Image (tube, one colour):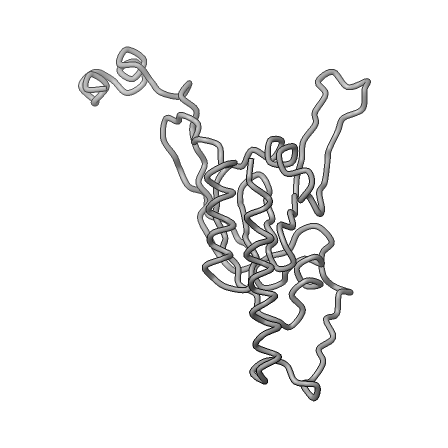
Length: 199
């Protein structure tokens, strides 16, 4: 479980530094221009790198914002239960009681650990938001160390080419250990001497 007390300390320090900077005439002055953030087209629960979702836009506005993005399989159930006090936004999917297999899943979790310390997590990524690149990286990596699942054993990987919003990219597909052929099966499918004996 993350120590929620660690996050507000950093945010409080940053807030104090900003207040001191403003007091010394290096920050915002009374004549600085105001910025209005249009939330009309922002997503409520999930954003992307170029267009953060509503909680992030609301908190950071036109101020400093840095993002650190980590990919991997995340244990959302444990993350939600161990950080319930910091859970700011979430989606919970549940099947009806009449379904054969009841499914309960968390998705699109947003945590707030301080005024400018946010973290977003879904099944495949963790994204830290902060006022400095180092703090965003620290948020994401600390959360990742705690809640990333160890990679499942696999028999290899192949890649699919897909068209996305930012152009072409490769998506990896992991094969399960059940797809590994033993030497006898390998020779049956590919013939003797084709390499199955070396497996």
